[in-house]
Image 1: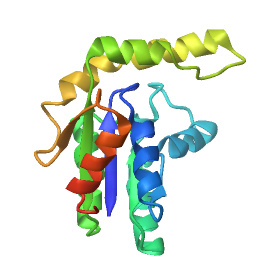
Image 2 (image 1 turned 135 degrees about the horizontal axis):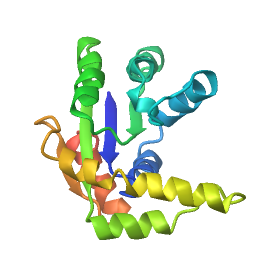
Image 3 (image 1 turned 30 degrees about the vertical axis):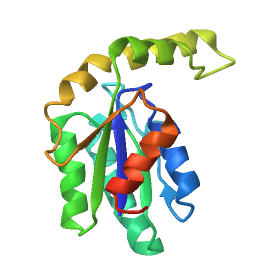
Length: 178
């Protein structure tokens, strides 16, 4: 089983996955950004977004399926994924492989997202790079908000302003784990 936690940058995906993991210790955590970082070190990413690489999408789906198949454990995935074609491609590959996927999306107001992004430090030793990353994250908020209407019908929308403990309870309950 895969539990995919989706939402805009700053919505609390990683925090929620950490809380779920603390209550579900056998679960593995797979962050697809690591696949993107590996690919970025090998090939050019013309758009600047590794999700635009077809290989990234194929490898993310394959690795998620492989983790479930190889280890027989649930996999928690914190990742913003809002392009309707990319969502269909990855979740379609999971379905084709026979892997159950629970898809959650954290809804958070724009102002809260911006405040959270402004409060994060991405590269402590490089303030200019840090600001660049903040602008990049903020520049994707609109696409994330717009995507709410295009996500699969079985997506569970969560109030991302609730405390992580309460959200984890909802995720575990929906995934029939509590």
